[in-house]
Figure 1 (cartoon, protein in one colour):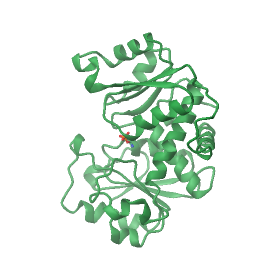
Figure 2 (cartoon, protein in one colour):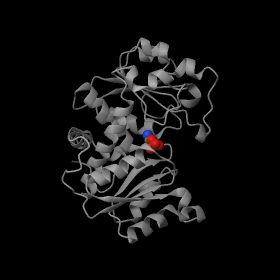
Figure 3 (cartoon, protein in one colour):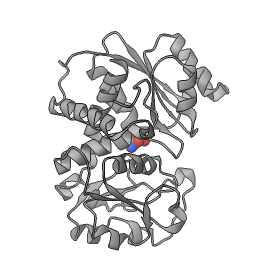
Length: 299
Ligand code: CP
């Protein structure tokens, strides 16, 4: 592996082989199902989940992944921590380390927050989403989901669309890095005002034209909490509507949470709508992928 494996901060730090090793380990854990009688590489270790922003999937899956590896976890949430009294992120992390945790999983609004913490603490740090730039465990679990769907080790030859509010999406930025390293051709789709040109791949505002040529499409949530603004015609132009889905046979992904009826129609979001709807497979892959990362860094 080229990656030092001390922290998991960005897919920029990993090469294609590093990703594939972790993805294969995640697939192994997926094959083991929900059993708890696996080896327990985290036995006797406590992982701190430091979440300064809200989360359902990422936080719960890190907790479950830790427990399935035989470890234990504690959760510290921004709203109830002393960060609400002005304590810095680094001080918060140093205090958790002083209590003896074996690793820190962190979600924060600062773009460089996780790297700054990694520079100050001696335990592994895992980026569970930072600012609008990086969500590397999500991108790795998306790659696990897609490679298993296509039955391949990598994504060479696949054309994948990421659609919606690209401007505010750390999922999009990390996926561009990860999917490209695995050989996929990625097109970002959205209205011009939500489509930055500096993400490093081709862009389009013509969803129908892109949809006709892709093998997978990842719909993104419009992030109203980050002041995203969309026009009245957003669903019609950029939503995966029933009409669009009827003529599309590729894989459907969404990292969640979903704005049902906006970026994806209610019926299309339901997994029974299509054998190619991978939205809940992504969530299941999330536990296994985080197990692979925790085992590698801390186990
Ligand atoms: N996909 C994702 O990061 O979801 P949560 O915000 O619920 O963790």
